[in-house]
Amino acid sequence: MKILVVAEMQLGKLKPSNRATIRMAQDLAAQNGGTFSMMLVGHQIGDAASELNNFGAETLYVIDAPAFEHYLADTLTDAISKLVKEYGFDRVLGGEATTARDFFPRLAGALDAGMCRGVCGLTQVDGSTCYQRPVFSGMALRTERIHTPIHLITVDPTAMGEPDAGGAGEVVPFDAGVSANEGVQFVELQRAASERPDLSVADRVVGAGRGIKSADYLDTIGKLADKLGAAVGATRAVVDAGWLPNEFQVGQTGKAIAPKLYIAIGISGAVQHAAGIRGAKTIVAINKDAEAPIFKIADIGLVADLFDVVPQLIENL
Amino acid sequence: MKILVTVKPVADPNTPPAAWIESEQGKSGSVNYVANYFDLIAVEQAIQFKDMGVDDICIVSVTDESKMAQVRSAIAMGANRATLIDPEDRKLGAYQLAAAIAHVVKKEQPAFVLMGKQATDDDASQVGPILAGILGWPQATFVSQIEFNDDKSRVKVGRETDEGVEVLDVKLPAVITCDLRLNEPRYATLPNLIKSKKAPMERLKFSELGIDENPRVTVEGYSLPKGRSGETKMVADASELVATLKEMKLVD
Figure 1 (cartoon, rainbow over the protein chains, first blue to last red):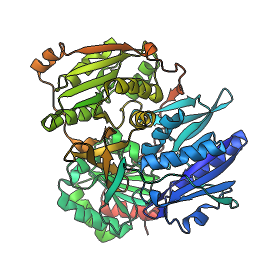
Figure 2 (cartoon, chains in turn green, purple; figure 1 turned 60 degrees about the horizontal axis):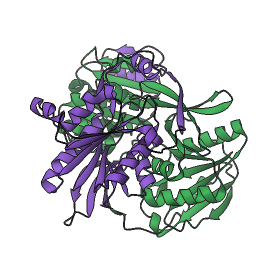
Figure 3 (cartoon, helix red, strand yellow; figure 1 turned 135 degrees about the vertical axis):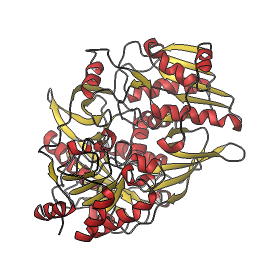
C-alpha cells in the first residue's frame, strides 16, 4: 500500500487538519503494511515544508509554483493526478474542508477512483479496510467499501487524534507541469477580518443562535468570546439572517468543530447544528426554553434568559 | 441558451434515522421522498436566468417512476422538459450517477450544468465535481452568488468556503453547484403542477448508457452514532455556571 497525504496550506500556514490526515495515514500504513508520503502545494511555501516533515513520511513532494498561489480545483487536481500516476500511489488522503470537498471528487472523476468523504473511522470487514462516515445530516453512520485500485479519502479532522512524531522524509521538488489556465481565474477572497482564534481549530467557541434576536447582540457575544479567548460560531439561522458571514456557520452545511469548550447561546440544537459540534468535549447550553433539544446533548445546561446571563458571565469570568 | 439542472429525490430530512436506514437497506418503504433542497436552489437559479436569455431548462434525474412526483414538482417551478435515467433497481454511487449525467451532458451540450452542492441523504457532495472531472470542464462549487459577463461566455461566482467568500471567474461550459444562500426556491403552483405533466420527458435506462456496471463504492452497513455520554448537569444561574466551569478547569 502506497499512501499519499495531500497536505494543505491556508492563508500562508499549514492547515491544522493536516495532522488528523497524517494520523489516519499512519493507522492505514500500520494496519495494512505500507508507507506514506506527503505532498505540499503552494507558491513560496518557505518553512512550511520542514514544519510538516516530522511524522515519518517516506517522501515529501513539494510543488511550489506561481500557478498554485491561490487554491483552484482544476490545477490542484492535475498536479495530484500526475503525482499519483507517476509514483503509483493507491491511497490518497486529505483533510475534510471546503477545498477537499471541491477537488477530491474532481480527482475521483479524473482517475475513475472511488471516494469516501469525511471519514471518521476505519473498520475491518472480511479482512479489508472499510471506511466509516456520517450520512443523513450526521444522524447515521455508514460503512463503505471502495472497489477501485485507488482509494480517495477525506478525513474528518475532528475524529482523529494527533499523529505520532517521526523522522523527516526525503524532500523531492515535483514539477507538476501545470500552469494557470483561463478556465477558472481567482478574483478575490472576501474575508471578515477577525483577531479571534480560527473557528475550525479554536479550543473554546461561543456559538450564537436565533435566540440572540438581532445582529446588534453579536457585540456582546463577541465580548464574552474575547473574555474566554474563544472564537465565535453561529447556527444556520444566524447566517441566513445575514447577521454573520457564512464562514461562521457550524453544522452539517458549515464547519464541524471539536473545541474543548462550546457555549451554545440561544441555540435550539437542531440536528444539523448538533452534527457540527459532536466532537466538542464539553457543551454548555444557555436557553430559556427548557425543552430545547440542545439540552439533550449538553454537558452543562442553564435554563435562563440569555440577555440576563451573558452580561453576568462577561462580568464574572 | 440551454441549461441542465440535476434533481435527486431524497428521503425527507425529517425522517427518523432508524427508519431511513431501514428503507436504505430495503427493509421498509415507509419513507416520504422530497426533491433535494439544494437541487431546488439550482432549479430556481435556472429559472431566474430566463431574463438573461436562458430559454431551455432541462431537468436531469436518475430515478425510477415511483419518485416522479418529486421530479415533477421541480419541473413545475418553471423548467421546460426533463430527462430521466432509470437506475433499474441499482443502488448507484456518486461516480456512476456522475457518469450517467455526463452521458446526457454530452448529448445535450448545454451552456452549463447547475446542481445542488450535495444531496441531504448521502451527504457525499461528490457528483458535481466528479462530473466536471469526467467532462474536463471548469467547476465552481458551493456557489452563493452568480452573474454572467457581458457576452455570457463566463460567469463570476462567489463560493462559500471555510476562509470566506471566494470569487472566481469561470469559463463556460462549467459545472456549478449551488449553496444555501444563492436564492429561495419558489413553490410550484397547482396550475403549473398540472401543466408539468405535459412537459416533454425523455426516458433512458442506466443499462443502455454503456457505463461500467461495477460500483466504485458499496455500502457495507449502517449504525447510529453514539450519543453523547453522561447526563446534563443543570445549573441555576450564571454564577453557578462560572463556578462549575472553574471547577472543571474549563476556564481560568
